Length: 169
Image 1: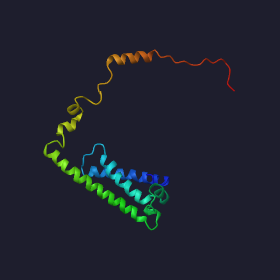
Image 2: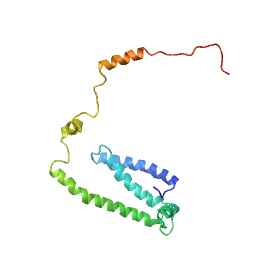
Image 3: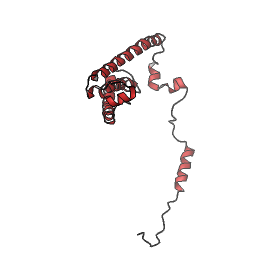
Image 4: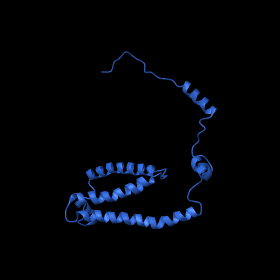
């Protein structure tokens, strides 16, 4: 963030790791399927990033960037809690906006039977059923390729420099 000092960025990053772990474990406990951990990364750490700005925003950097006297709570002063409050209101607005937009969309997909794939496709993977091919070639090298490799490795020569009796000083 452009309004945080380097030491604060280090603290924010360390806390972000723990925030990610918390949200990832919470999804497992709640049995919410998120194969790529998008919720811990974008929702959990997105909220933490906003809150961290409200806590760690440096007065000088905020003034340089925005020309306002607001700063993070940890710096104290008359406006110390104001920025944190604005960040929390922003988080609540984003949650509301996404909920209002996405919940009807997800409900429509669910009603049309398009929200989830069937259990077999989920188990096998979507590469074949939706993309008409495997994502990775798991067959391994052909016998011809193995033979060529063995021939090439057997013909490699190890070159050892000749010892001419002179020592380097």
